[in-house]
Image 1 (cartoon, rainbow, N blue to C red):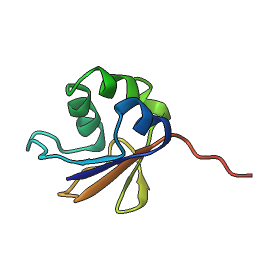
Image 2: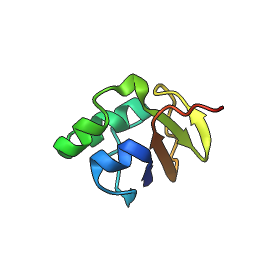
Image 3: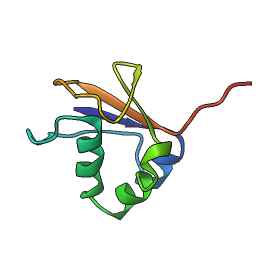
Image 4: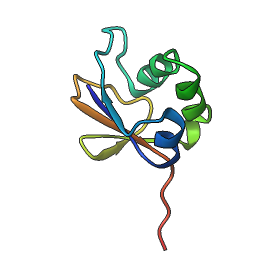
Length: 83
């Protein structure tokens, strides 16, 4: 799976994207976040306030309960405001 990181999520993790082999036990966005947090302190820092992280699958916003359903790409980014 291709995982994209934007803004301060990218800054905390230290990379803008990566390709990872996701375990079969990871079935939702929340599961993926929990699994990513096991990869090191930089991931834990990026996802420490899960409620403030947005996610998108195939460039469509999704919530953390959304099933991954073999998605090939997911993005994580902070809240966006307009104006």
